[in-house]
Amino acid sequence: MNGQIKEIAMRLRGLRDVLNISVDEIATSCKVSAEKYEGYETGKHDIPIGVLENISKKYNIGLTALLFGEEPHMKSFYLTRAGQGTAMERTRAYKYQALAAGFTGRKADPFIVTVEPDADEKPIHLNSHNGQEMNYVLEGKMLLSVGGKELTLNEGDSLYFDATLPHGMKALEGKSVKFLAVIL
Image (cartoon, rainbow, N blue to C red; front, top):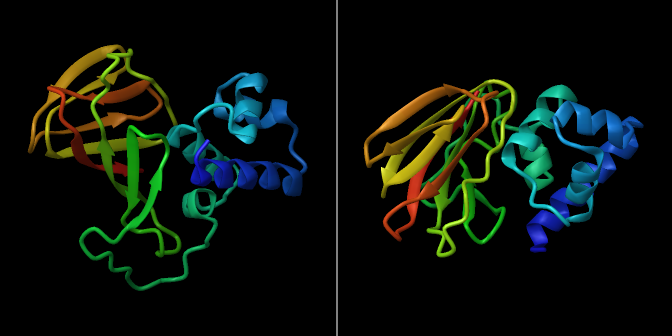
């Protein structure tokens, strides 16, 4: 388990302890089994961003606090210079760069997401979370599955969708894909 995932897992456990929430209760709110959720807290399972988004909204905890352990402080504006967003690498294949991590009271969570190609051609890992999402491809080509429908998105393409539908993506043509993801 990489260090960032371990830190997120510890924050999840700490949040559950502070709020006195059972594993069953938080697992239900995340729409996963208790065993799967326990795997998130121990680092046995990768923690999907959708799970973190569900926890963030359900328990009124900033997504930034779960991801990076810091509360945002800026209220007027928050500038993110090119390549300087707070980064988190969920797995070797997924890298998230937060673009508004320091802005408090955000209505949306924008990220630059980089997905590396999968040499093993595993099936797409699906997740879901409350709200809506928009993905805009900046570089490369990706397969995006939403609610059982598979769509190929090229550079410059975008898709806005109901994030409660199971969704996931993978890079195509053996090259990484970079896209803007905005979670509402």
